[in-house]
Length: 115
Length: 109
Image (cartoon, rainbow over all chains, first blue to last red):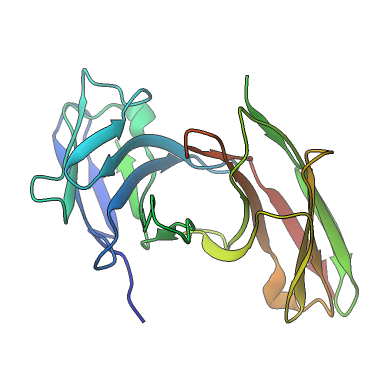
């Protein structure tokens, strides 16, 4: 069964350092999402791509976060510099949107701890 | 604004039935999802409703009433492994997915 791949699974970094996460969506999925999830809350959308274009990055803290999907396949999310409040689970998901079905499939996530 | 409301936590007994409710107010509607999320793991897709009525999938069923902005997830024959958070999410008219905060379900023997 096709899966969304993410790496690393866990990352510990010191504040003010740079950190990067990688995501490879399900083959053929045009839409890719990066979410941040804090314990006890629902996922918060950071950025949505359709192919290589950004569809929605209204909640992305652009002073420190950046995301790219250069060839419309895999994607990288970067944080520089990391802050203590960035500690969270970072989830990548993909879907066949705009084609049906619209459900999103999630990767295993990256647990980020900033010390 | 747009919001999804669901109870924060529920407790049920192994072998019993539990219903988790979700109400939503969104700018348009293009479908409603239920996801299951075990602690420390990513959400996994459970069900999708776009038309009114009940969708059944094994021990899990999901119901939708678009006129009431309401859905529920019904879990039958509860097992200990069903202890998890259950997230309700709605696709609005812009095809944005609006997420609820999730309902933590605790199953007791």
